[in-house]
Length: 392
Image (cartoon, rainbow, N blue to C red):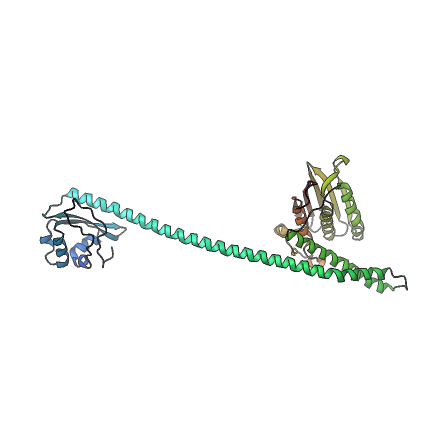
């Protein structure tokens, strides 16, 4: 109870003839009654048998008691952890009263229970307020995260659209560069010097490499924009694996790498339904990546088998391997692993990111196991697609 306030907030009367005191405000009367205030502050009960004998000097309080016809008063402090919340007071009207010990004990006990109840109510109010504050913060944080997510998605979409547009714009002049360099390499009017031929070959090879990267960007942009469509057909798994390996034989031989195919299925399970071009693109990306990071004299093997209605492809190499802490970054777009070979091998960091997207487009999955200086194993699961389904 604040020292400068003495409002009565609740009352119970024996009958209606007793005057109500709810509208009364004691003001400073209670604090002016020094002996009473000291008792209450210490948690002690105050018993007044006759107010006329006890409060002759405190006129403001005595006048109030007279108006209410109060002659005897029993007051117990409502205190919790040395904090005085208020008073529980029993009044005897019209006549003096000698308060018994049992009455004092009863009032004191009720006051203690009230103190506990008030404390719990305060705790509940505090908890409710904290809960409300936390809920408001959660709402604010959720809205902020939502706004950030929308902004990030918009930025990603704009970036993809920009890359797709720029890639399209680059295709036409690049096609001219590749076409003209190819024509000049086959030029029949006059003999080229070795230096001229080397220059033209470099231009042609660089153009082909740039075209490959642009096509990867276009494919990735289409998939991210949800515009990629699967062209589902029936094809031979063995044929597509053999054609991909054969197309890379020369590249592997040039780098003195042994490339081979291990087919672990019979002709009866050879026919499969998926997007032929996309599956071949997956194999091509994994094999070229394995060849790229395998030193001279190493081995690269493509294994093929079928489990239930799922085609299994596994590319194993004896390359430089990948540290465990960097495996989670392997399929990130435009991300190259931080290795001592980064500058030596180059690349855009799109190949494996696109490969994962193509696998997921078939509702499949890709996993990798790797040991530095030993090699890596990439395993791909591609479930058979329904011929009637043409969209991802």
